[in-house]
Image (cartoon, rainbow, N blue to C red; front, side, top):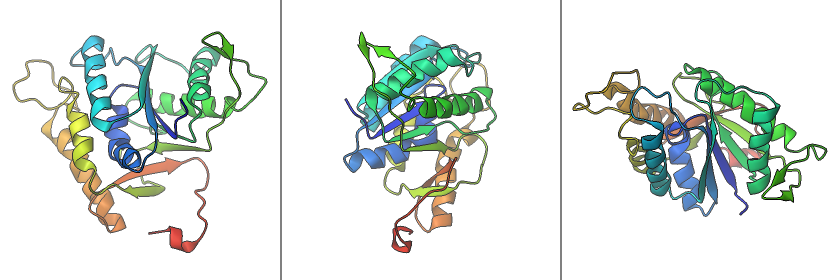
Amino acid sequence: MKLDILAIGAHPDDVELGCGATIAKEISLGKKVGILDLTRGELGTRGSAEIRKIEATKGAQVLGIQIRENLGFADGFFVNDKEHQLKIIEIIRKYQPEVVLCNAIEDRHIDHGKGSKLVSDACFLSGLRKIETIYDGKQQSSWRPKHVYHYIQWKNIEPDFVIDVSGFMDKKLEAVKAYSSQFYDPNSKEPVSPITSKNFLDSVIYRGQDLGRLIGTDFGEGFTVERYVAVNSLSDLM
């Protein structure tokens, strides 16, 4: 299956939190979207890898994505090397996305920055035909996504562009809340972490509102880029 968009996250829930509303909007416009999780999130303060798998499946169902895969890299300890790059290249060549969405270039969690660079490098290398990959016993053709965009995560990084996601924030919040073991629960007996506070869950909404305010809409999601964003004419800009 060829995808229009492949959203990649270091952990299950990264994509929902970073660009869930954008994905929901693109799917409503007829785009085929998939998610690739690099790790199982096994080092998360709350829950477990098994619980996270169930939650990720539910989050995918809420958003209505086409596929979701997990590469099972070591949470907290994966590195940007040939072995890890080739695994991602196999997935990129398998689904041939036009657009890849991935982790913030620099962030509080070390896996986010590492995952960002790893995915970006893999997207470039995937276009080199002399790098040979075999998937399901068949040699793959080279493929390089046209665009690589980085969603915003913990830190309030200034975006290079903002997508109007008005009308899709409820869907995003529902997908985020699919990770019920992860986020705010006043009845939970598990340890507290920076993402288990009510403030963090509320931030999903108020960040979207603030970015929306800045572009003159109700809600927005921001992205950063590695190269200039091109438009055909001034009328393409809101």
